Image (cartoon, rainbow, N blue to C red; front, top):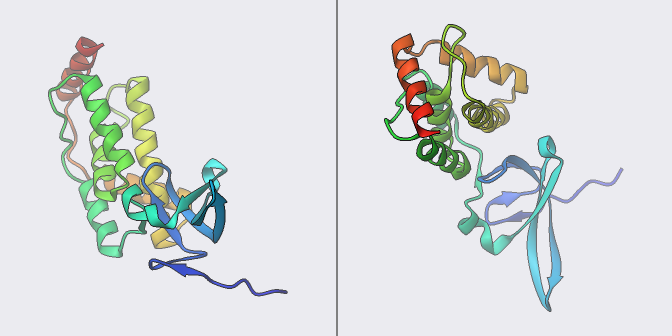
Amino acid sequence: MVAKKVQTRLGFRTGEYVVYPAHGVGVIVSIEEQEVAGLVLELFVISFEQDKLTLRVPVAKIKSVGMRKLAEDDMVTQALTTVTGRARVKRTMWSRRAQEYEAKINSGDLIAISEVVRDLYRSEEQPEQSYSERQLFEQAMDRMSREIGAVNKLTLTETIQLIEKNLAKSPKRTKADAAEAEGDEEAAA
């Protein structure tokens, strides 16, 4: 058996989990050199198992794309605390809110993503979500659960249960609040 050499660049090393804002949690498979248009570029090769995606990111572009290490334990605790808070749904058109939620999800910021999960969460006794609302909620939940799972070394199922347990602690929105939000959404459509 040949031992694989661990490579390190800019504090990132092969085999380490990282967060790439547009795709979520991936693992650095290798650091390789590739010639592109006569220039030799050093690239992080990042694998996103869940999406069956491999991404090659130039080492020099790490800061500008926002790639970062996994959140620390205190950040995970803060994110779980965030989802227990009261949903803050702005009184703006759904299309504008949806853009803001999408921007928060793609920011790669765990706290911003947990705010989206909190704001779009619906318990069993609340009215159904629209398709687009549900899609954004699931996307945010997926990103949040994958990062927390990687930090706490939990399975995806265990992580989702942990997040849902915290969501259950949040103050319940009344049916009137939910109906009002739905009315705003229909007006926006």
